[in-house]
Length: 318
Image (cartoon, rainbow, N blue to C red; front, side, top):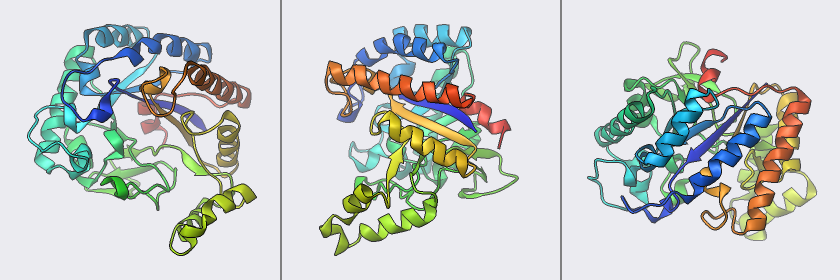
């Protein structure tokens, strides 16, 4: 088993769905976070948006990290602030997957070329903003030479937010052909590395079925999912310090190790490194606790002898 840490590296106020006028105060917390990862020998993958890729301070900081071989830079597309701006601003159009394929490609091309120019590297790892991934997105990524995609959130349905439904997908990575992005193919040219989301129960597929059934009416109105969780019959956990305690993430990792999963993909947003910006870290105490949660998890990873790799390095392993 290998650990990958992927960070959606973003402007502060990305949820406003505007194309300019952003600030980058959360990025000032990156050096301290990077030092924490250095302590454990972890090289993260920063998946960066167009505003970050064009900010001089961010360019200087991440170029230094790259020169020192301390991280990987990948691509993270927020359609509403990635040119060209041709679509109407709306929640639906904030999902890359909902845009026409040709407009997707033009946005991805501009973001890709901006990263190449400003950072001196050719990114091959990608995550869609707001998890807005589709078959068309996969085709366009392949045209640009991307090898690793990481937008699938297992057992999670985003259709209430105009997004994709990933509720039937497991956290297992798989090779795929760009022409059939959601079906494993041994000869596929690309690799899908889902965010790690699973259950504390042994059989993920069965537990997911139980939760989906409990989420349907009339059981939904009875809050059956919460009851199942409290009783220990169905406990869904994200490998993310934004929504899980270190103890929960450790138990999930142990369960996945026992059942043979090859990769842990630990995910969060850079905005969570600074209090008061995102929805997960509201106070300075939350901020301190957030970093402590990451540290506690990394201590477990080190003690368990689980090595860390960059996202792109998974391509040669699966």
